Every structure is written in structure tokens, then in C-alpha cells.
Length: 490
Image (cartoon, rainbow, N blue to C red; front, side, top):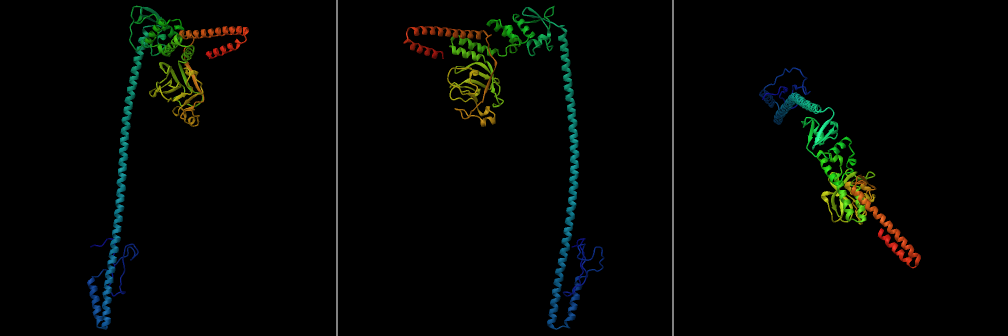
């Protein structure tokens, strides 16, 4: 086989061991002549060396004794073997060096080609990404411009339509509007009719709807009874005077007025707690007809707090329960009214063992142990309004209490998982007062009871005095009667 290009030959004259001549030529590894040195010797054919060695051995055989001749033959054979072994080692080393050099060169070439290919791929990827990004940005800008143009166009069209509608609305009046409500004629201004948004009259004269005049005088017809329409106009002209407007109405007139106010959309503005007032009046009438004096006093306290808010005076309850608003309902549990929390999730009621508690509606348990989120310690005794409960006897669970306050709070005497609220605040938002006819009637009856009690006490005192003057022994009897009267009053 051809030798590698980097390898050089080694000329060796076949001589007995220790008599070799010649020079070793190698690459720039340092084992032969220096790089660039010329080599003039050429390798002779091996058979000539062998023949030369044989001739030398033959010529010497006649000159040496037999034992020495045998030793010379052995030395020649050993030298041949050593020469062959060294030649094999040199060839193997030269071949190995050449292979390593070629492998290293191949690896370097492969690495350079790989780096070049990777750089080309990266550049192509960057160029492609830039192209895609530019395309996306261009498309997004086009979509954005189209959307902005569409919104601008829609907004312009809406404004133009509103301007035209307002022009039409302003064209039919020059500061006043004539109305025909159920055959009764009224005169008012456009600003008055539009003063409360979301109502029937505001929508009718907003310009968003096309309306026509019903007669030659330019009146606009509304097919509703005109009896109470003047009161509605008065409310619009001076908002907030509904109590003055309805103060002289009978129950029937008030009911008819509420119907008209509801049709025009003013009921929630005029009387936001009208439904609660109806419940309160029902409680007062029932207590006035069949209730005891204590029941009448409880009804007065309950209707005085138709709508109220609860909350701790110091940071203690969570935001969900702080300033929670309750409104009275027409439902009763265990003989006491139910107050619903605004939002519909919680409610307050009297449980089976006479505790007032706040709990979730879906977990209502009228019977059994109390399971309220917020609960009052007081139990037993007559039914009272929430505003009459002691403020320092409310307890709350972990869900309703701030985490830091719950960890250090005072545990309840009956409920280990509840902590005492330091001072619960109950603020009345709306309730009936003495101006309500039903409330006035109950207060009058309570006043009569007080007068009767005072008169009865005075007459009993006069009788006891006369009895005491006439007979000393009867004094002890009168004292006994006096104690009985005190117990009854209590």
C-alpha cells in the first residue's frame, strides 16, 4: 500500500545487530532530519541486503571455527528479526500519525462546515422572522385603521342621528310643552320632563323617538288618568317633596298614586322603601288590634328600623359583612320578622332558641342549634327589634372576621368557633315615624295605656292611705298589694 504523504522512509543497511547505518527521516516531529532537508539516499531492495549478508556469512564461515560459525549464523538471524520488527514498528507509527492527522483535519473541516451551515440557517431564520413580523405589523395596522375608521364612522353617524333627533325635539317647542293627560291639559317645560333619566316622560321627550302632536294647539296626548299627574309634575319641579305631596292622602288615594308613579317610573325615586313601609304598617295594624302593650312597643321599634346597617365600630369584620344593609320583609320565623340583606345572599331572623342571627339563605335552619355567621348571645324573653339588642353581645365566625382579630378574639360562652365583636353598630337607614297614620295610632294607644296606669296607681295610693289611717293592721295588707302591682307593671 502507498504510504501517507506526511510519512518519510528510513533507510537501514542490513548488518549484524549493532552495525546498522543510515538516517531516520520524519515529519516535523523531531525524530529525523529537519523539515525541508533533502534526502538523497534510496532504499535498496531487501533481497540484495539478504544476499550480501549471506555472502558475508559464507566468506566468514571458512575463516571461523564451527562453534563461532554457528554463533555468527544466530547473530545474523537475530539481526534480521530485529530489523524486521523495527521496520514494522516504524511503519505502524507512521501510519498512526498519518491517520490521526487526517482525522483531525476531517473534524476541523466538518466543524467549519457545521458552523457555516448554522450561521446560514440563523441568518435565514432572522430574515424570515423579520419578514413575518413586518407582515403581521402591517396587517395589524391595516386592521386597526379599518376598525378606527369604522368606529369613527359609527360615532359620527350616531352623533349626527342624535343631532337630528334633538333638532326635531327642539323644533316642536320654544320653552314649554303642552300635554293632554286623560283629557286634562297641563303645561310644563321640556327640562322638567327630562329632569329624571330613565323615566317614561324623559324617554318620550328625549328626541330618540318620533312623536306627533295630537291637536291643532300642539298638545301631546298621554292615555293615562290625569287625576294624579299634577302631583307627578310637582315632584319633578321640586324633587324630594313627595312626603309633602302625599301627606293629606287617604290609603286609597295613596294606592292609586303609587300605581301612576309606577307607570311613569317614579316610584323608586319617590319612595325607595315603599314595600318596607307597607310591611311596617301591617305590623302596626296587627299590634294595634290584637297585641299587648309589650307587642305594640316591639312593633314600634321594629318599624322604626325598616332598613338598617350593621358593622363593627373598630376594624373587626371583613368587608363583606362590614356595613351590611338589611331590609324588612313580610316573612316571619318563630314569630319575628325576617330582614333580608341587600344582595340576597344573607338574612337575619330569630332562630328556634330565640337568638337573632345572620346566616346564608340556603342554609336556613329554623329548628335546632344556631348556625349563624353572626349571632347574638341574648336568648329567651320577648321578641325585640335588632336595634334593641345589646351591642356588645354579638359574635362572628372566622368567615366574617378579620384573620388577625379572629386569632386573638374572645371566644363565645356557648360557641368555641365564634368570637365576640367588641361593639356592634346598628344604624337606622329608614323607618316609619310619628307622621305615618298607623304609627300615630299605635303611639296614641300606648300613651293611653300610660295615662291609665298612672291614674290607677294614684287611686290605689289614695285607697291605701285611707286604709292605713283607719286600721294599722291593714297596712301590711296594703303593702302586699303594692308589691303585687309592681310585679304586674314589671
